[in-house]
Picture 1: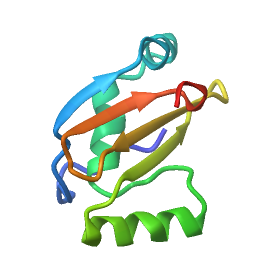
Picture 2: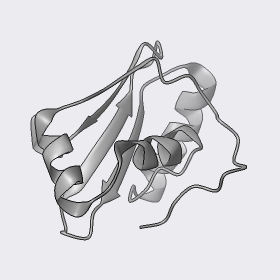
Picture 3: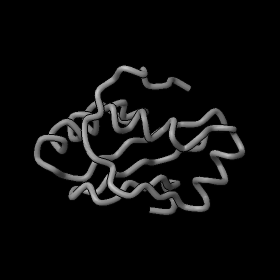
Picture 4: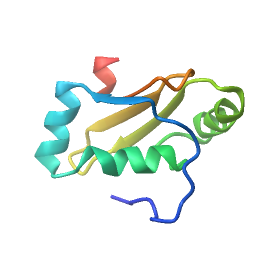
Length: 98
């Protein structure tokens, strides 16, 4: 899985960072630290979104709307990272937990 470069700019505040039990279980299963996905998210690596959703995130950065990243793991499962529009909380979760 691609990792964010150490010198990439942090684009927004994460607020409180939380994760669902399901997301934590999958991350443990594949040996991936949640911070790796958080780093990608906060530096604008939106993961496996289509071009339209990536453009929507760019607009959301400017307008203060919700931000979504989606990362497909080696198991084929996906983890979403969502930062609320008011930047109060960022959540790691499975799509079916939304």
